[in-house]
Image (cartoon, rainbow, N blue to C red; front, side, top):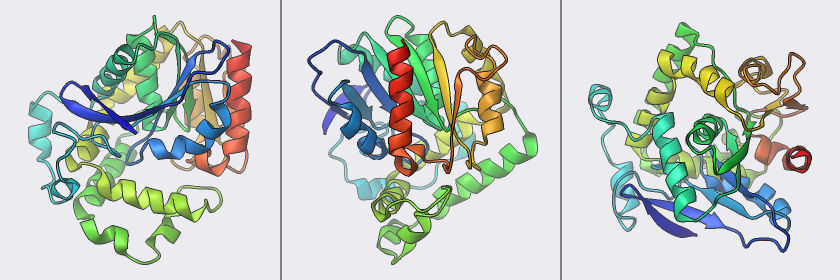
Length: 302
């Protein structure tokens, strides 16, 4: 793991060695309250043929929100939940556009000029914005368990309220609570995932910066932001694919197809949508082998 400064924030990243034959760099972007770690099964499979970049979004995993990377993580866990009114008034570093700007600067600093972006959930939306901002560097996008573009007021209000309470009520000792990782092995997935991923989910949930966790949640789920996403997709000239979990209750396949339909590849018959059976919201650790097959097919076709 290495760190790179992006607009004053230390970003943790890992970059595998380039393969012997020329190929695009695969850039993996994680979702809300997660980290770069969940891509590791795919990285191990793809690294012999593609250079792979994983990084933690600002305020998540090992990336700090706006401070020196040596600052004690306990200070973040003890931080007071940020005032949502203050977040609205101040320029936010947690909008989709801001995260996409971080991504673009990361590609520039690492001198990556030919990339495919692969984003999970929130990371998928960031990937779409990133492709819009850096069309010269980004050659294609693959969204995993990501879609949307339909604002349903009651559902979003409930999601925002629950999310804020989750962040607010998490104690720092949560990681030491026995068997909680067993619960996270079964949450939001079609079948239990290996226990190490349940443990990783717990670690990332506790470690996320309160400011980033709340900021990313609120800024990515406003009515304006949700309704803007189809417009972003419709203007992308690069190929864009969407991989859905057949049993995903967080981002149901119908919402994945809705967003995919705004891209020229859709053509009325789901040509850019792939559905993985027996898969919930964490395809990269639920069905890594099947996801790898689909990623390779897409990349080889271009």
